[in-house]
Image 1 (cartoon, one colour):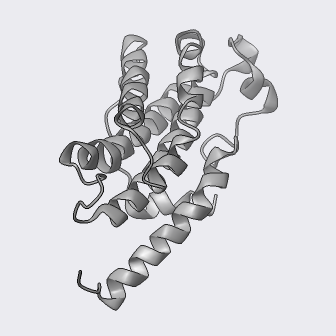
Image 2: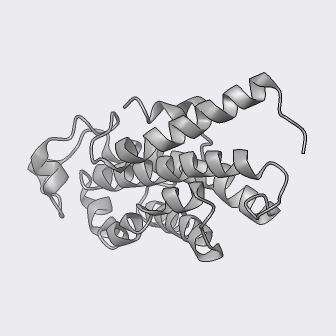
Length: 190
């Protein structure tokens, strides 16, 4: 096995540290996208006219698109290519990126559901997805540790596809938006 260059090692160490630090902030309920949501809206399960969030559908589409893009780019594609398997070339980098993407996906999916609570149509349609999104909470650490199963990887794809189809059925079509590596690591600082 060859020794990676200093630049590659530095990138891997930075990514590993970011992945380690990302788990706690990504699991928190606060985020920059939905900081404008007051406590009444965040706690609401159904939306009255007084609880509506400004641009709720737009925020939902943005957050859901970022979650779906991260899932596709850094979880689904490497999973299908076999990069997460033991002995695969580039496995360590894929695991670090996958863990970052998993935490990012969980954070953005949760933000999308919180944003959806501010729209009367979406709030009713996304209540059932809350449990599925919460099921993603512990998966970033499983991916980072290399312990994730096929079912774990498929769970990310299934949840993001459910969010996308719910949005489309309720007038908020979601398209994948692949976040940059900087956006993934930015979650550490938010």
